[in-house]
Image (cartoon, rainbow, N blue to C red; front, side, top):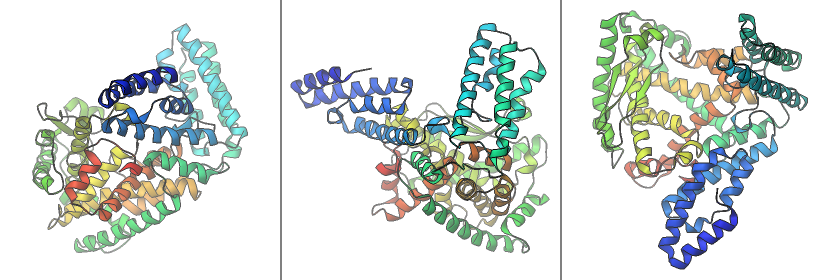
Length: 504
């Protein structure tokens, strides 16, 4: 890494040779710095390293990398400074069902040196669990219940050395001892939780947004979506019960279900092809400088092996210029849970103008990969939600009421989990209340997101789901306030690579 003295010498030499060379040297120095920044452990140290580089030596393109990364690092440094516990910006708990050294047991089992090293890591994390608990940072009871069982499962199976087994048992016991203090709520309960949540949400968006404002706008959005869904569902003869109840009834209607065989799966994929063609034709209305990738993507069926394994939908990304084709492989193992009306909107989220437009443009932008990763964590998923809603607003479902219901179902899922995130952490919702809210708002859980999983994710990572939902709504707000064309607005958002909302 370049120290302050080295940076001053580099900058002085560049300025003596002229502004163009200074910018060239500055850009090279920034690239070196960003390449190594992920290896710098603390946010405060990363911020110091960034401060050692003079942004005046950077080209406009490199300055975007610098400003975006510095913004994200400053937010993280503030969160870690004010709330020095848990896993830092990743979440308030050092050990969860998705994080912690205990998840590495299978890799170390039967290898004495690896087991010894892992036991030390587990013991250190147990020490931190107890230290954090003394400050009031206690995981919710439902999460502790899952952890205490999962952590000791390898011990029950046998085959571990006594030290590693003892470390796992100690960690499970340390968590169990916290249950009387855990309470029934699913979210954070420690001192200044509102300030913590606000910083976590700011980190997701790269810009401040008051949680109370996020809650107001999500409530307003859900009411509007439900009002439209009510009209469409009544037109289908579904007049009784709430929107969620009626969406469940429609999802069970045999008229819209595919057969659970090869013919049914092939038909589902074939039904999506016209929607992809219509989406591709609509793109020039909203986007300029389209990459060749948009003409080289398709929706395909998974291999029988992937389907049998229950693999979730995945993308094979095209190259930006389209010379290498790409595809979205649709998850159809539980095809009876994928009614035909639910598939058209998947095209807009997963393919175009969602991820398969966004990711090639990110590649073509030249943004440094570290900027792409940290500048605005909510941007990737938030863009895809914005994209599916954008095409709905542009008339993609006009004259297709069932497809519009499907679009509403997916958007309600995005809005519901964002609102649930706020309810869990700031309103004391229990897991049961959170799951009831999801069911009432969106009907059945989506194929890849059981309600229990969504509540667990929200409990572990405050602000993530809300950040994705609010990126969509903030982008929509910025678009409405934009004085130029739709094409120019989307160019500002996508063509320069991922930026925090505060920089768009």
